[in-house]
Amino acid sequence: MQKLEVFGANKLKGQIKISGSKNASLPILAATLLSDKKIYLRNLPKVKDIETMIYLLKSLGSKIKFEKKKLIINNLNQNKKFASYNLVKTMRAGILVLGPLLAKFGYAKVSLPGGCAIGTRPIDIHLKALSKLGVRYKIIDGYVHASAPEGLKGSKISFSKISVGATENLIIAASLAKGATILKNCAIEPEIKDLVNFLIKLGCNIEWISKRTIKIVGVSSVRQTSYSVMFDRIEAGTYLIAAAVTEGNLKIKNIIPNIIKTEIKTLKKIGVKIIVKKKEIQVVGNKKIKSLNIKTAPYPGFPTDLQAQIMVLLCKANSRSSIKENIFENRFMHVAELNRMGAQISIDGNKVVVEGNINFASAELMATDLRASVSLILAALTAKGKSTINRIYHLDRGYENIEKKLQKVGAKIRRIT
Ligand code: UD1
Image 1 (cartoon, rainbow, N blue to C red):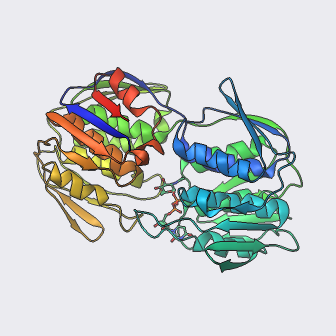
Image 2: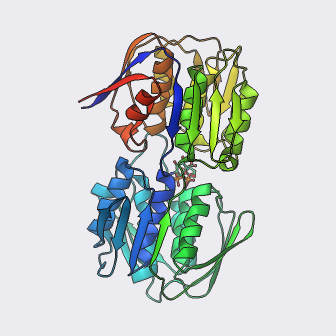
């Protein structure tokens, strides 16, 4: 099994180019199932989750190839409606094929997503909303068997809780439904806006009518299109924190700073110097990090996907901080590992108290999920000596070329195969 060796502690300096967004690419790839024409996608990140989604689409009959830097998807003869456990178990976003398959064929059999380290992550909100569009479903042997014998019919739906995946599944499904669908209490993550922009380019009729309400008027078919996926705001946030935590000086390029306003504001409050330009941010680390109380929330709040990374930075603050995790019930798997490196973090339900003034010590570590893995790298970058991070397949799900990007800015990090 591959692992990473990190030798701290040097300051990161230089520039890092941010890749395309994993979380925007996944629903966009699922949405290509709506089409029977060619679709050209650019700026997809080269990470494991995207590979898995491509395998899933191929297993459903999509013809897919890379040409230069574009992914070409041809769904002319796409006719399978079965998404197997093997492909959906490793990646929860596999459930996003349910909406488009139902919209296209009126039938789908999709495995329930596997268990997940960061919480139970059910799909009840997806299923309840789809049933309002006319879908009937049964769960048999771990599979959702869903059908809409008369096709999907537009409806008014108010989500009981803000869910990124359910909002995406429903927007995609409603795009081919008969009549108009109004979705209220939608997630408004930038990746959802990116999905909507893609669908509009594909010929779908979608408009935001207020902050969390969207109107979709079903169309009978869609057209050929090409689209370039947005930048990965979580990758960008991770490297902003990497610069801050190593007291380095990094330019983070290929981004739209406006989309990560909350992260920039939070880092500024902590005492990190940030210079915002049109498509880049320069971060200048500061020895004096201030403590802060943070809570994660749906966009535009502070992202749960940066909770583990900001925790590492708060360990360096001048006094005690706290973080409340409001999205997932069990997303503190990194705490035990950070404490093994000398952190003093205590968990109380969905809140952690983070003691400041910590100097991390190197250690042999175990990655537990995608963002937890990267938080261990951040801590290891500041610790003198060699840290080894095991189980990095979690990391490879969502960070493109992470060790190469870090090596380029002066980190001593290498992959052991
Ligand atoms: C997406 C992101 C993930 C991010 C999360 C929250 C992708 C591929 N993944 O995950 O990186 O951490 O948003 O920003 O984009 N829930 C239910 N029932 C449901 C659906 C969700 O109870 O049917 C709960 C979840 O368990 C969780 C919360 O709602 O506690 C939010 O989940 P959701 O927004 O759906 O996250 P994902 O779409 O899975």
